[in-house]
Length: 304
Ligand SMILES: NC(=O)c1ccc[n+]([C@@H]2O[C@H](COP(=O)([O-])OP(=O)(O)OC[C@H]3O[C@@H](n4cnc5c(N)ncnc54)[C@H](OP(=O)(O)O)[C@@H]3O)[C@@H](O)[C@H]2O)c1
Image 1 (cartoon, helix red, strand yellow):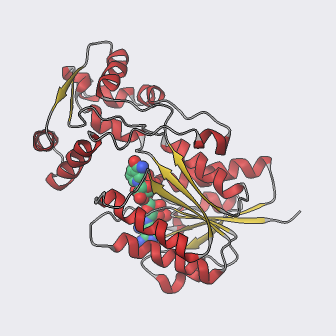
Image 2 (cartoon, rainbow, N blue to C red; image 1 turned 120 degrees about the horizontal axis):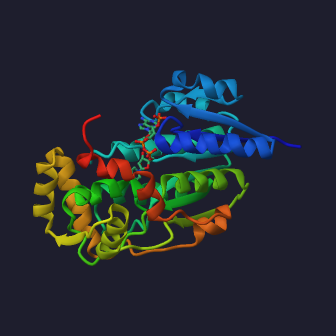
């Protein structure tokens, strides 16, 4: 049986780690996969090496070494970097990776994009993904674009102090969001790498439901065992509230701006692409919040 060489670039991040571990699990069931983890920090992964995972150094800021890092790889997961600084660096990183993959003869790239990037929707979240998708189309390389919804982790910020004072402060207005579990994004990426698909496809990876603020408040109320009331704020008020809670101003303004943008209902998208790709059901928000209940209630817990 021919061995399929899969690689994860960005393997040390939270998503990358989940994908590598999922592929190790799949390899135990379906041998015939060679796995390589490519990262800026290969030294941190002796445990993977012991499990037969190839480890290579790869930094998208150092394009001269990237084609060697991708040598022999047939299917590559390109995880979008977290260099979200508005300087264009992230797009340059992605361009370097795609060009190196072309030079190395990679047959298929799986890219983690963001839900429904569109022309004219100028934002730090959108633009790099839209441009990277275009680079993939131009590259001639077969690809799978996974347009991931917002991670459920963001709910830890969205719900903020709701467990303490029963108020869900938000600038998302009437908008809905189909928050997805990072684990589900990892399952989708692992499945798209391993399934051998050779063409070009775009898949929306969302949670099972699009929730508005009242729905989130109802879930939170059930979890906390007390009423939770929605308090509508505009973007400036929301940013001030984040800052009052200790968040740095640039981050507060960015998150408040994103919440305000959600009020346009642009993220009201629920897809069954995840189910079709993985054969699994996407995990609901309730499960994530239950798993992080302690963290949400932390402000009310006595010091350890
Ligand atoms: N959908 C959402 O709600 C959401 C939320 C946050 C982020 N994201 C996006 O999804 C990506 C993965 O999420 P995550 O939770 O795993 O983020 P994370 O834990 O912050 O991981 C950051 C990722 O960026 C990679 N990276 C950074 N600089 C790089 C460079 N110079 N060259 C190569 N790789 C570089 C890291 O790879 P190594 O450390 O292995 O080199 C790692 O895979 C993020 O990077 C971001 O683009 C999506």
